[in-house]
Image (cartoon, rainbow, N blue to C red):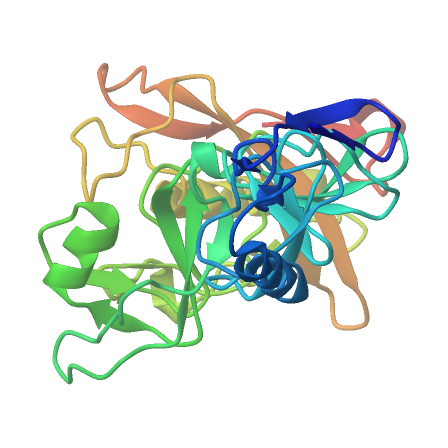
Length: 342
């Protein structure tokens, strides 16, 4: 007489004829009637159940709800009817689990991202960008970045976009070894790195650019008389532009002298060269530069904004110059000459 084996839901799992052993329907050896040495098979089954089928490979013919201890990952897994998933921790797979419970974690190996099941959908925990697109943001260097002369390691963070290094954030200025520059930026030469942020590509500024510190090119300060670039330009040396202390022609002379000084200063900050120098590209004609000017009258500091436009020099065609392109307001001028056009 055959044994009929049922599942927990009442459906038939297997029919085992007399004297037969079924090792295909499940991960156990199901023993039929009148099988010799059946005690051996029963004991083997008990050990498998006791150890949750501990092995480096999952058991065959698994049943829904069956446990398996993975001896490689040292984790207990449960069969959900399709695949084995950890009973704790995160599911590690390229596709999510078929069955989920609120709070379940899934490490998506296809995108290198960790996700959380909120009861309805998987919510991304991080990283925000799929690993398929490469690294994004600031990360420690994968190899030590060293100073060229001393060979000492430097404290730097590498800025990535789509897996490519585009710059460094550092705590000191140094010369980056050629080998390191080649590794990260494909530059086959020792490269100057500043204390702060160094980009290896262009920086495009759509708004005003305020520089609060000194400006250098190849280690050389780019300002006249050792002056540093700030948010304002000191026009005190060019006299008081207020006609309350002088006549109108004198004020205009002071204003024009200050403008000439600023115009001579601007090419050092905003390149007007037609022949590329230090990799800089000259600004196009009609570019506008706004300069905040400060004048110390002895008791207060007066501020004004003067605007300059890059034009083709009418006296020397083909040469770009910064020319003043605004009106200068002086409240103390008479009503008819309240605006001095220069």
